[in-house]
Length: 141
Image (cartoon, helix red, strand yellow):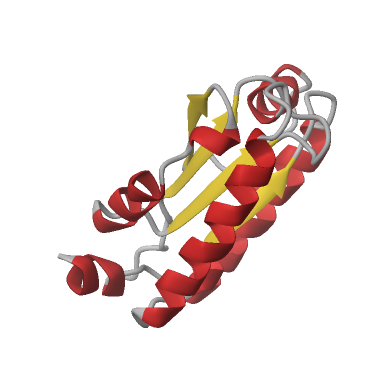
């Protein structure tokens, strides 16, 4: 009997845009996978790279940082900091031999519930095709 792989996806979503977009997706009854766990943060710029590594180390198969579109940050430049950290962390993941495609940056506003649901669904499907991640836990411990 073969069980279907159900990936664990962690999404750090900014309070002002992406979390509100996820909420809009829910209230609009737009479907996205139940395995996407959303952690609300005040700004995508406050997501510590250590949190992303910890999520992977503790078994996440994919991690998303979701924030406001560039130029629309409630804190003016927080999403620019998020993008810089994202780029550096992707390079670090590649350097240690981890598949950086398991890590995604998403810009979604409060009015883009449909986009949020579509992106979460597409990312989950991509991770399902890749299979479970085991490498990072061993590489960074």
